[in-house]
Amino acid sequence: MVYKFRLIFEDDADVSRTFEIKPNNSFLEFHNAIQTAIGFDGSFDGEFILSDDTWRKKKLLSNLEKTLLKNAVFEPYQKFIYVADEVQDWVLHCEMIGFAETVASETYPKLIKSKGSAPKQRPSAIIEDEETADMDDLAAMLMKNTLSALDKEEAEDKSDESDKKSIFDEEYGTNKEDLEGFGEPSDM
Image 1 (cartoon, helix red, strand yellow):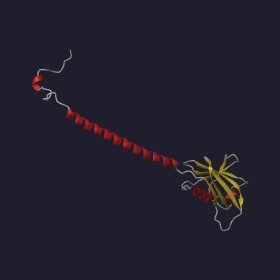
Image 2 (cartoon, helix red, strand yellow):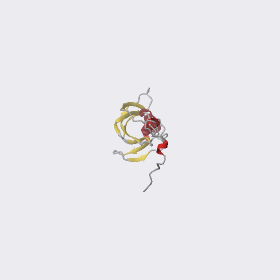
Image 3 (spheres, rainbow, N blue to C red):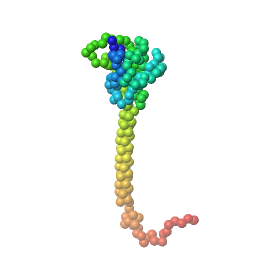
Image 4 (cartoon, rainbow, N blue to C red):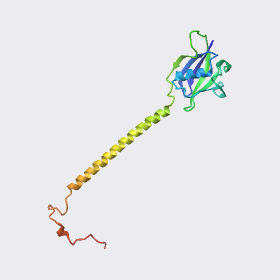
């Protein structure tokens, strides 16, 4: 006999995984199978918390390596809360949904059904990297445009200066001697 468990992401009921697992398998083996099935890297040890029918936490299971499922499954439809990644707070509801016959040629725990795409394990890091990259690109573009505009202004200023005529120019018919004696306006 094997147990059948269905796990559903707490934040997305459309994503689920169903497993068959032997009563003599450890919770660590179950954890590793879950991590693989949802595409997580296994960097977090995982937590199984015994819960009641309304998913209220009752007891944290310790030592997943030594705790066998048969020592924690006390009733049909037993429920556990599985914390897949404490950092990102990925929580799955794990419920025993029945029993099946053991197949001697199979290896357990065994994923028997996968529904929906599991979320990325570290979405905030991905978003942060994308936002940082976008912000870096935006900053570089703004800097380039600003420098380009400043270079253009500077070039225009230089061309304006060369286009300006001096009042001492022959075109205006004045020379420096004509303006001698004229001072700056004084305050009256």
